[in-house]
Length: 387
Ligand code: CTP
Ligand code: MG
View 1 (cartoon, protein in one colour):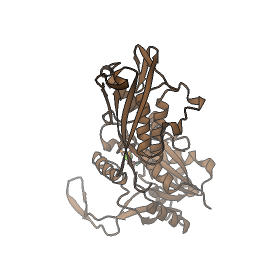
View 2 (cartoon, rainbow, N blue to C red):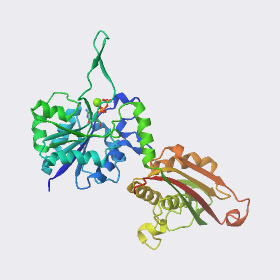
View 3 (tube, rainbow, N blue to C red):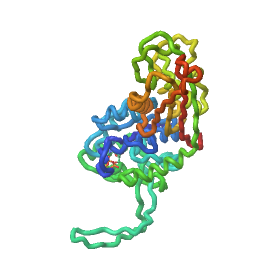
View 4 (cartoon, rainbow, N blue to C red):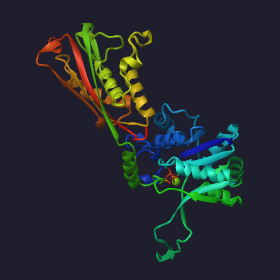
């Protein structure tokens, strides 16, 4: 069995993608682009080690994007893609790989067909293989005078990644070409005198390069996660003596506190149950039994983060959460913005996807009598159809 390592190069600055974060950390349908690329490859080649190459300024962005995924420590890239690949190759030396696949972080829609074709070509004895799709458009080149010349497109291919190599040969080729600026590793192998083979790529495996590509990627992701689930959650805690309550992760001074095993954040508990309901994975008590002493007094954001992690483990996307807090007092209005911000932070969601509301019950029932606080929540999750 040949040993396979995948290097994902993610150290670029994304200058052609316009303003904002480097493109690999921007969201596509609520999920960082890099995370989508990593999880796609983990699913396609579960036996492979994955080495991500990042820019040294992006450490925090990187950790947040791949949180919870089983990955090796990242290595830092260089000024050119070629240098970044070489750093990745040096970083995996200890793994003594037979084959290495080099993949652009910016291609989140890598498919098992393309990876399969690349690996098969290596198995057949190639030391270098690149996936390509035949060019269908008419190709023209302008000269410095602005004159157009038609290029014969016969035999022309648009080249993609992952590209596959013998680890040893690729490393030697890179070391012999330090300081050049080839835009792919096939070219580095060519320069070192190797025969580079081609296999079939796929139209869907495009590289997110320009701002317009984000729209295309968003549409593609939406189609892949169109199994929409809505979950609801409900919780009640009674008042006891005290001086503040926790609601949506925000501490609010009050003449009483809420009684509970944890911090009694009734609103976060309702949202946690809603998220768990959306993926049909039990309820908060299933995951954090009140009988278990380790959950005594804990902050409830831990429960909610855990539910969000389960969504991500299913390759799902949390699209929206809403909660309504039901009580006469304390007044919720002044704290709503802070509550939304806190929930958005816990879930790594844009604040526009978080709603907090409040209502009284016109002095009726237990909430009306001020005996406790109730909260009711919904969560909307998008899951892939194939899970
Ligand atoms: N890359 C890298 N190190 C570099 C340059 C590029 O690791 N010094 C990576 C990018 O992060 C990307 C892949 O190589 O995943 C393909 O490069 P490209 O699409 O050109 O990305 P950027 O260089 O980031 O974008 P731009 O050229 O528009 O600045
Ligand atoms: Mg570039």
